[in-house]
Length: 181
Ligand SMILES: [Ca+2]
Ligand SMILES: [Ca+2]
Image (tube, rainbow, N blue to C red; front, top):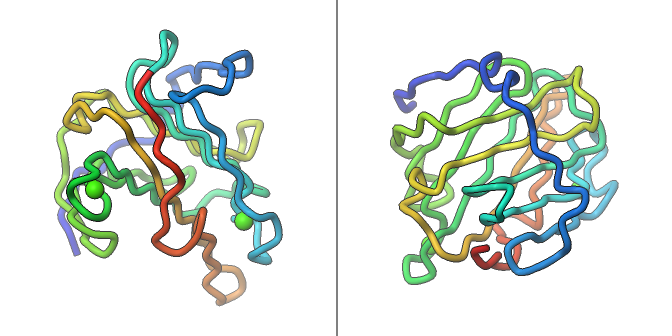
């Protein structure tokens, strides 16, 4: 296990989430889809939105939309920031309505990682908020000021003793690169 500094989701919930409804699709703003129904569980991921720096969103914002967000759902987003170094460079782990494990530097998908001090990190994952999505906002400084980024998402939940998992877009797979705005 890895030693991490837990941050309060309660504090994160106080941060307003910027709306991106009017933002045009562009290189620095991409909404990717994941198959619906590929896992028979509330954690079924439907889409992943990645914003890589816009006038309204300074930093990197990731929104994971799922079928039904429930307290206890576990999420992980891996972030690839360096094309020259195979695999992800960072990840963010959280549990809806419970805890977040902050931003971690990793070498691989299986690397438990080491904590990165990132005071501006905000994670919002609340069963009682509208929308069934989790929102992660990461200051660019926490990610070593990347240019393009791409992400891989894994949601997990234990239903009646069965471990349900949905990777988006697939197991240890990444969506396309999103250019910096
Ligand atoms: Ca899915
Ligand atoms: Ca990489």
